[in-house]
View (tube, rainbow, N blue to C red):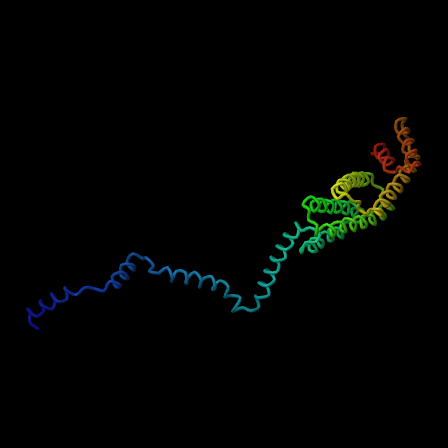
Length: 255
């Protein structure tokens, strides 16, 4: 090839222009810029998400762990929502399970206090239902209050026999008085009485047993004139079967 022919070929090559996509690709490589379309980017993110969970596909023995974790999270969510449920609601039975578990875990001495707190909660639920005029929930709420009061009565019968702790007696007395006021308020709203005969009898029996034992113990103690007067008043109240007031005198005298 002659010198003239070489020069002509070079001039022809100078007229050739590279394709546009080749120019963009080369520029991106030089500047280290990723050339991924919006569609490709979304596919890549999706693939990465699936890749993160592919461990459960390739390692089947991990699937039970995933299932357990999902179930655990689901149950926590259900129990959380159930705490706001009212008698007659779908999740109320779940709420009752957690309440009964708390009662079961309490000691025999602590159980009456837990039961009394539960009674207060049931009265709160009934009050809310009455105030919101939720007629479909009303019958269930009344039944729950009466049921819990019967269970509380049973707990009080047991603890009255063995209890000899003035502080516990004081706490129970305060809770009982709060429940009595709460119950009266609910009955005014409902314009009807809540059946609490068994509960009232147990409260009365609890006070009687407690006061009778305390009086015997105080009679064997050296008392000053003021304490003697309080003991005398407690005995008179006891004879009049006003056990609640008699207990108030005893607690003031002893603790």
